[in-house]
Amino acid sequence: MNTEAFVSYAVGCMFGRHSPVKEGFILANKGETIKNLLAKVSAPSFMPDDDNIILVLEDEYFKDDIISGFREFLKVTFGAESLAENLEFIAGALSKSKKGSGSPEKVIRDYFLKSFFKDHVKMYKKRPIYWLFTSGKGRGFNALLYMHRYDKETLAKMRTDYLLELEAKLDARMGMLGDESAAEKGKQVEELMDYDAVLNNKALEYIDIDLDDGIVVNYMKFEGLVGKI
Image 1 (cartoon, rainbow, N blue to C red):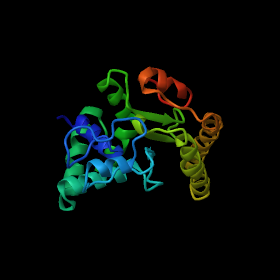
Image 2 (cartoon, rainbow, N blue to C red):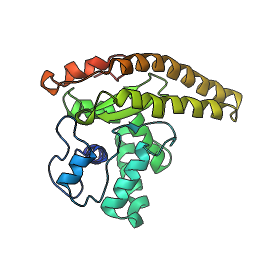
Image 3 (cartoon, rainbow, N blue to C red):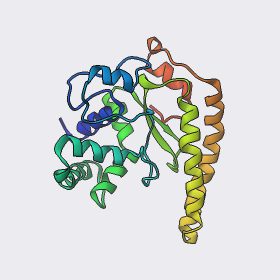
Image 4 (cartoon, helix red, strand yellow):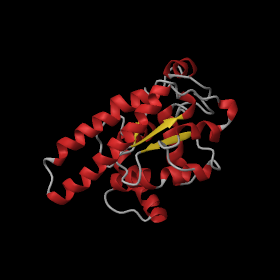
């Protein structure tokens, strides 16, 4: 298993598709929840994300941040004492293939921001099971969700619990930044506001998905909100 495949497996564990303590697929049917996982894995060492929304942002604004989840996965799987070593090893492997730089966590975060979804789409032959909701080129807002755990309330939750909260956090941060950095954050806030208008409209539609229709048909129901495949 190469590094990118290992990272993909870790994301699968964060969503409950996989488990470090049980082989095979765990949550792989439409509408399954953490309750279903607990029925299949009696004593999970690593608990998946509870609301099926994992943030992929430039900084750790929320507890559901992907780097936070990745750190916890490494701690549970390999031990807290080797966390720094494992982060460094993974970052080193990713920086060779993706030319990242900076601290290990920055390299890994940049991979999630810029390359993970592209690799996932390629790995799954343009039939992604982890869907990227993104505000656009400015990468102001990015969130992954697992299609099998999607429900009609997911978009509303994404908007109220994360997108609107992020707008408020960025607004507050702009007042503490220099002119250039504040202008950059200002552009991101504008991007988020435009994205919010689309997300709100889609959330009010309470969109359902039918796995029998295939991944692409379902993914395109969210056109304007999701990354290109």
